[in-house]
Image (tube, rainbow, N blue to C red; front, side, top):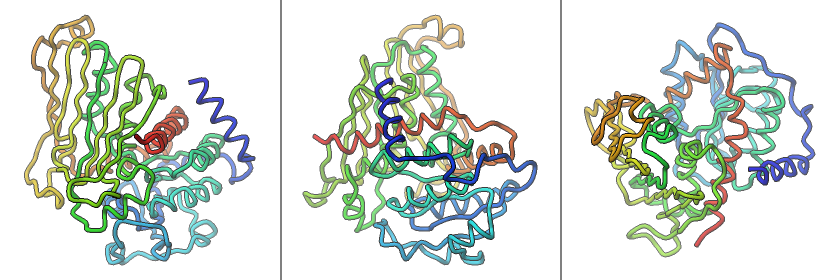
Length: 382
């Protein structure tokens, strides 16, 4: 931990960063709708974030968007501009000098995220920044420093943060109910079915691990006190049927003193079977799938999934389990299926921007640690 803090401090000093780069301390907007600009439509999550902001009309006033389609940055698909029709298109200059929104949702192609988010931070505007956070630590460290110095809320698009079932799993693991955690296994498989996906994802270091594993790292690290793993590394290979150069099948391991976190991602899997299992000295807890939607999911075709279930298996009942009222054997928890995976995060951000709840300052450092571990995962390849 000390090593990481010293490293980050040295990195920030090296950037020559000054708190004067932006427009001063951020303050909440008060009890009104939050004025939002959606910056970029080339990210894979862009249309989902756009839809979520529009649906949360009691919280947000969607003003318009910035067209980034002329960017040469690699992306999985060409975005469909008709999804954003009916709203004005702004230039960056208009956003900062005329519109001056309360919130900017940064949804550019991956390689443009850091550059745009840096400009947003310089102007002192709250933001939702999608992931991943660039191929170097320095870029996001600079953004984090500006936001931290000036209390600017910056929410990263790690999509499991408001998944109640996954929060429950992590809380049980941290509480000691399953004893000392020695293993976490998780996967982020999908089958997007895009013929250009291998070329797209293989452009990035670590391929699919760069694109997806950060979500699991963000969720898992707090179970171990939010400290960096002793070592993080990956195995990268092609998924079945892909060319030898394809980085579409990965296994990433975070090593802790008495535990391993094993995270898999393969583009020939099935998104409906994404799962997580945590093993401890007194029992195990698991969930599959880790996301369900009450409406038809166009990727999986699954209909009418109303609930998500977490299953806790205890081989022995320790004091923590007894205090929580759990019994030996199977204990289960049922949660309603999600309607929208982004809604919970954005509603929380709205409350922060209005000043109803404080921004969790620990997130500035947590997000840096997650980014550091995520970069280790895609640079230490075996």
